[in-house]
Image 1 (cartoon, rainbow, N blue to C red):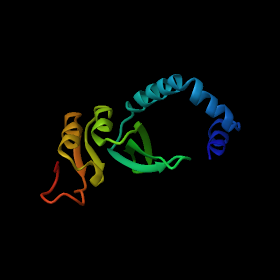
Image 2 (cartoon, rainbow, N blue to C red):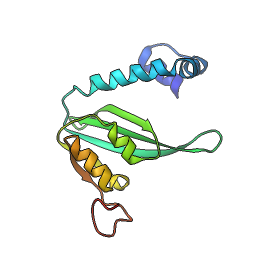
Image 3 (tube, rainbow, N blue to C red):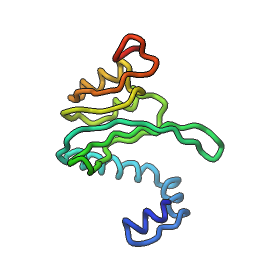
Amino acid sequence: MLRAFSLAYFGVRVPKSTLHYWEMRHGDIVEEVLRLLFRLLSLIEYDYSIVDSTKLTDWLRGLHELFINVRVRGGSMLFPLHAQLTDSEVDFTRGIPDGVGFMLGDGAFDAKPVLNTIASKGYIPIIRRGITSQGGMGQE
């Protein structure tokens, strides 16, 4: 998939070994470049924001959770702003850049600390009530 991605976006096929080399030897540089890119993308006007997560397994069947924050413009253009491998919604939301308008999310983000962090960053949280929430939004 990464090779097809590199061919589509860079016009050349980047071997997986090259990607692995950069990730292992220069991961800090790649991380800083991505952080700067995310900062530039945060300057683009948008209609609303979305937070979501998905669980992935590695080759050793270890479970990892990837969280992502994107902004949507025109209903079809997505701009990623923040991504993090973590097991904590609270830690993830602390890294979301400040913004305005609505932030949509699923029930995984229905906890008071998460909602408070989202609101403190200038967003209006529109979060689906969690399945285990007996008393409504923002349960501990």
